[in-house]
Image 1 (tube, helix red, strand yellow):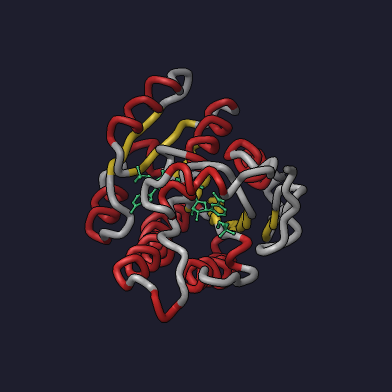
Image 2 (tube, helix red, strand yellow; image 1 turned 60 degrees about the vertical axis):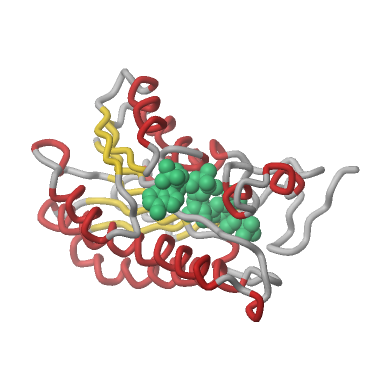
Length: 248
Ligand code: NDP
Ligand code: 8X3
């Protein structure tokens, strides 16, 4: 079995790689940080690991990476569309347009390029499973989350739409929509300000990448006639996108 995981160099993607490796899957792992990818290959040495270093925003790079797959690596059983990010937190009137472009290009267009390429490998085999990492931000909006929330609402819509398109080809499509997961997500959102990022999780027993990986693996390991459409998951201390209880 082969799992193709985008954004495996950190957080949820890295935890998914560990979970699938633990369960005997060979891995195609992607990201832009080459050193991190090499570390993963050394770590998951009990399974076969193929590293593909590319930027999901670049459609030519995505196509080249997928076209480079040969032999067994073409038989992708599970695609985890995980690579993504939030940049900044600001009102629409103050938003940084470059940040908007990056979020849209990564979270929406990158996911589309990946899905287009990998579904072409799954269709002739009449088999496959695509697990999209959405967000609670794709189910609700919160102040200053405008464009990030819009990209995750797009993932939510695409998840439903691609399921219909791929239905005749026996390809399962599922979405996991997490609330607060303590990864590098907030460090990226606050552009390297680790102190501000850590405050996001102050007093909250946040989800970990491993919690999401367990759910992704559970979805992927259902019997062939079962498709989990979506899972929305938050820390117990988070009631929805905007309400949390913090321990002092
Ligand atoms: P991390 O920042 O820890 O990981 C993000 C991953 O995405 C990295 O491996 C990064 O790799 C990759 N990535 C980002 N941009 C690109 C790009 N242009 N090309 C290729 N890879 C890219 O965050 P998370 O693990 O938390 O995030 C993973 C997913 O989960 C995202 O889609 C995020 O929106 C979603 N999510 C996160 C939540 C949270 O609270 N943490 C909650 C809900 C959803 P590299 O930098 O090496 O390219
Ligand atoms: C990440 C969750 O609520 O921080 O998608 O935007 S949130």
